[in-house]
Image (cartoon, rainbow, N blue to C red):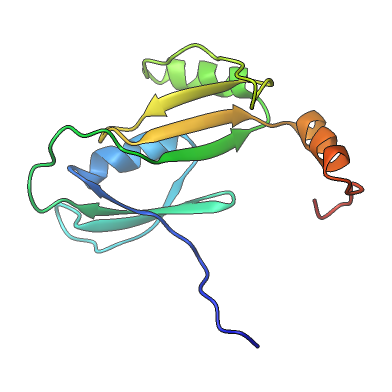
Length: 140
């Protein structure tokens, strides 16, 4: 057996972990562990199929442009957008770029990290399986 790494979890430096937790909870993440300090120095959150960790920045973070975009998927982007708007988030319109014609919106988290939320329903998944030449199964 070849050795390999797993459990890929981006760790983001953030100004205020508690604020980041509130933002990502709105997207469906749940806090699974923290250092239990006040204020928090680190936290780990999970969502269906993914994880993030936050580490409190030791110094004020300058306003920077992050060169990474986190991609998330939802089977009902319009409904999620309505839910986030009802929670008070300012949101961009849903766009339909060539690489995601079913719909996408891109948000910035409280520290400026980009989060692209893409519409990916069963219809898109079945079309993708056809395109890559795989038959649909219960495990896809």
